[in-house]
Length: 159
Image (cartoon, rainbow, N blue to C red; front, side):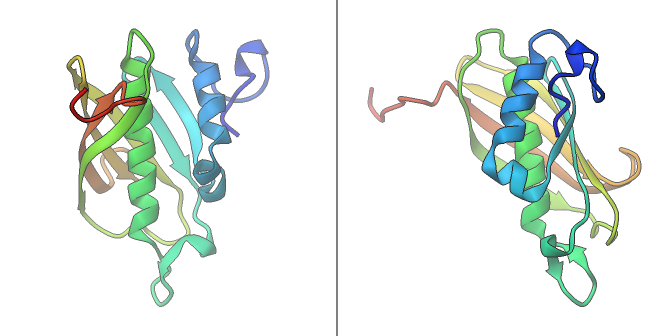
């Protein structure tokens, strides 16, 4: 699903050193499996994903348009992977804030992509821009700006 094993000559994407494992872990997440999200590319601080149109993901039965939550999840997943892929010392990441501008409905029956890039990393917070699109990156469906907590596992208020 995610191109895991591509480093050993199998079909699928070729991953930079260390990223095949990340792609495999992402592909094993229950929500990623259920939605059919596929990792297309991971590189330092960047990620591209896609999902294929399926009737069970429709938000408006009359028009056949995907539910906005599907696009949100695709963007959030891509952004989180981009952050993780940009960390020198791997740590957990968690969404702190996400703003999504829905620019137009995704065309029914067609694949939707998400591209994300980490543009600023502090000790505890990472900032990402992402966009959902069809066909090519200039055909945007939604634009996203997000912030992620870095190293959030075990975090306690006041500690």
